[in-house]
Image (cartoon, rainbow, N blue to C red; front, side, top):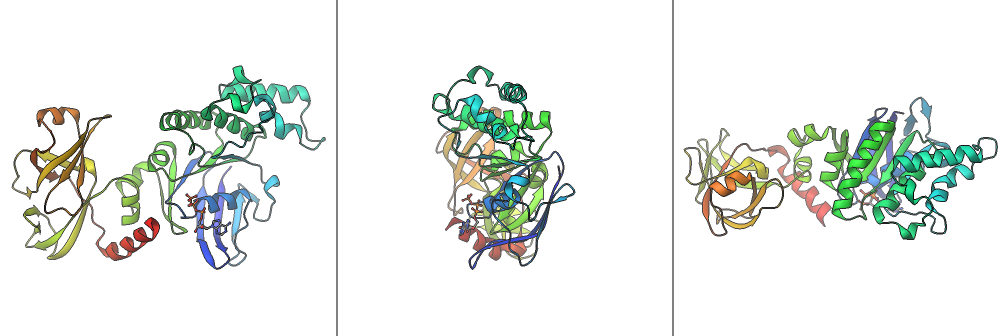
Length: 365
Ligand SMILES: Nc1ncnc2c1ncn2[C@@H]1O[C@H](COP(=O)(O)OP(=O)(O)OP(=O)(O)O)[C@@H](O)[C@H]1O
């Protein structure tokens, strides 16, 4: 089921939560809404669900496939929900929680009790909880409870599944597992899902496409790969991962900042370059193009790469470099070692320097 939003805006009193926006989600897509706190993600999700109404002016429109659902009540939209807090019925078993929505359907559309039993067992099998059908929510882990919530949301065979920070309350390892598991389930059942998260890694790992939001606006809609490699503006670039800054003045193709210098093909004037941690190479001697002396101040060799923190007099904020374990060993890295940084590549958003800094300040404060 595709979802189309046209000209949807939202005010709460005088304050604007969403600017008029358009969004097209394809049938079968898994889409993440990503943005800092207060950027409007939950409001957008609730408007899709029918839990919140959009502004009347401008008159927006929401379609699920060919159905115009703009004025439909939440119960008629055929959406399933999963929220951060499990919200299971505590006095009901896992089985009864999943069956609940089916048992309260109007008599004429309600499946028979045999059909309900079969459907619930199939769902519990899918979320790998059939062994726990008779347990109560208090006897389950957080991750298991969230899987019950998902089975319950799917029981009514919704056209669209909406998830608001579904794994927000869980610890890092369980989150990881549930992400992978949701992705499998989504691919297997092929429903259309939209989920809210403020976790960049979660959005990039799980989504077919990510909608990046800030201040009630959609900044970019793209595949995780395209977002990371080709951010349309500085906000998206900075929000999607760690960033190192190099500010200085350019004269005759050389950017200088204190005792650091870098050859750049840029016009004369003040400039700022942005680098991802994996774009910083560490070497033992300066190169013909780069003289960026740094001192190693912290090392974290956990995970697939080694994270190295770097400081220097010419740097306002420490830099972060991620390097391969093999390079870490070859360079004999330790705290206090002095090396040279060489940018493999860098990014620039010159026209937005001031505007983006302002909007970041707003979102941080
Ligand atoms: N019921 C409400 N009444 C008044 N203002 C609201 C209401 N709900 C949300 N807002 C405001 O609308 C803006 C967007 O909020 P929303 O919850 O959609 O953001 P979010 O991106 O989901 O944030 P978070 O990640 O913190 O949940 C915020 O400024 C918020 O204070």
